[in-house]
Length: 255
Ligand SMILES: [Zn+2]
Ligand SMILES: [Zn+2]
Image (tube, rainbow, N blue to C red):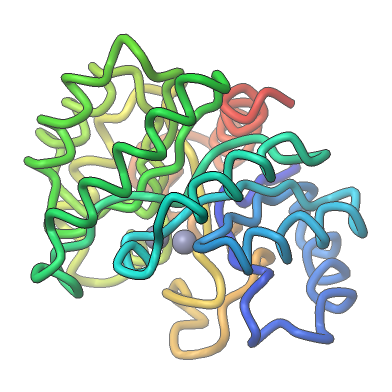
């Protein structure tokens, strides 16, 4: 059984000096590949560097909504230039987060659409971070649908109805640690409904450790716990969920 962690921040400071160990844990637990996303220009460069050092790691470059406030034309130009680096397979993470930064809605939407322009121009899939902002994201995606080349709703956090809308727009839906928590009722319904060929798993390391390792620093090896829960909720063999999420990650990232 081989697994693909479709989203983990190995470029986070909390992993500094520890990557060899993290990669060894991945191998011990069947995790063969992972995607390290950028959140701003600086850590996008770190993601590219890690991808150059480790065959298991692929990278994406982008500006997270938390970093939207401090980004300008120069940041967009740098992100676009970084897209041509080896092993960069997507643009993101980017998105809308009204949970933390509701005061900067307009700036967040501006920075998102700037990156959509780049994604369309460079024919790259996008990795979307969406928190408490699904209606706005769906409305925006509908107007960009024909210009974009698809992508991922990472760390999905909403209902089955919302998941269905994203699938209709051609997007993949990625489940993370919260699916394993006790209060995940709404997420479970969404997890049951996403079609086999649109499903992804991720850890979002170092955040959101799944059960039964909740509260520790999360790492890609833990993606197996999310795979197990997903298999249980979908009533599918765990090997099948591993295989299809691995194939889906390779397809969306063009590997
Ligand atoms: Zn995110
Ligand atoms: Zn992330």
